[in-house]
Length: 314
Image 1 (cartoon, rainbow, N blue to C red):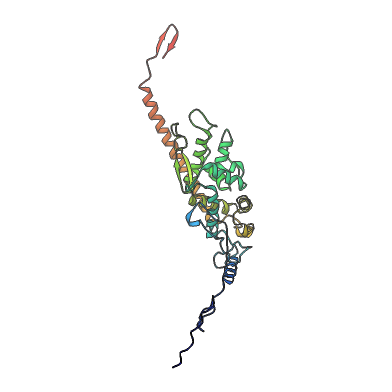
Image 2: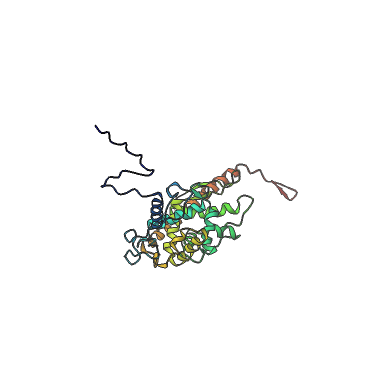
């Protein structure tokens, strides 16, 4: 019986391929495919401070995601509407605020200080009198703002400035500015926590340093932006340029903002006005009672007045 000759060795790279399977791409082809996929996907700014936004890509502008001010869903240069018709922020606005918050809180504390918030408002073009904390620190006597359509200006006008002078041996300028901003956060229900700024010093009654959370910051900026769309359009574009947020999206067009303050926000504003007056009156009544109790206590310690040779001594 004849023995068949041995099968010669296969050359390197030889593979047996089934007719039903496509040929395996070469390493060069695999690299080209990966590059094409990356070019077709959004790759945006990396948010370092928060895990949920740690590798957040740029939001895709799809007509089904958001509705513009005219009721449609047309994207505008990569951007879509930041607000619903009732003034509620869209997910795109919330993502944008999270991007800003990440820059304002690089230490990942979850809160921002009043000084940080004040600087961000200045960058957004707020007038000095409309920046509650900044105006309180900058002026020696807190005055009433004239622009009450602005949310910060409104809350300052409706709650009434405390007219506390610039610093004293009891309270610092920052303590007094904290008091004003804290009243704003309480009146609008902006999510925050209160801490002691200067441990060991006298604490201003009903004061403390308010620290805004991401939720409170987003809500505050939503109120500001829906309440004054024109100013917010310019201000947020300035902030985008300053921090380099999502440069691939381009500048914010005016169309992604509301045209005017919505009726629902106006109603909320009126509720804040009532709530602010009530809270201010309750604090005033409480301080009056505390003062009366302290005065009654001092009366028990007043020494007898002695009159001698036309002089009086205590």
